[in-house]
Length: 273
Ligand SMILES: [Zn+2]
Image (tube, rainbow, N blue to C red):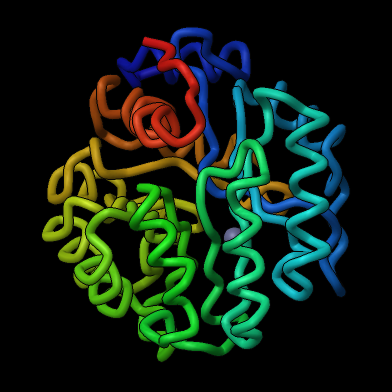
């Protein structure tokens, strides 16, 4: 193998790497309408995680994207039944403003939630819209994470729109889901300009220099790993990180160190070194 990375070598030989545990910052949970997922529940997801050396995952329930109350309760149960393996994002649906307030009010009760998940494209509601304000104010006050689905050229959540929100709520930390897929220049500019915006890599594992470009222009300290599990196998994204032309220090940052730094204060978890 020409790749000089010790981390890549161990992943190739064993499928996992003890010196570089993986934290997945963008997971989901449960079945999804009109698509077959072979392992949508906790036991199957843990099987995939164990096979790929993924220590833990931060998820939002698929059901919560439609019915926040039911889905967030389901997520809370999964977190409780799988201590240390599953953490959560509480989904808010801006089309139901009263429910947003209710979900925000419940945040303090639930253990293991790192912040909120916004899916502005699916909800067809702009991320800059007022209905998100209660969640954003709460995230700002409690210094929580917001995993925001973003997509290039979207009228609801393109990178520049997330930048606008991040500028207004500097106390919250925003994970730019899918790294603003496709609109890379704008996404990288927002992550560079805003201390509280990280690039999240789900679906953005394009070969041919994208990861190198992100590391070069934004820095590996501002990039986190994600997969959309149970949609996609963790090894695909891990492979892209292992075989990008970056240093093992960058791989450590992207695959787990940044995530530990972000999750530590919110969840009281210990960094692994
Ligand atoms: Zn997702």
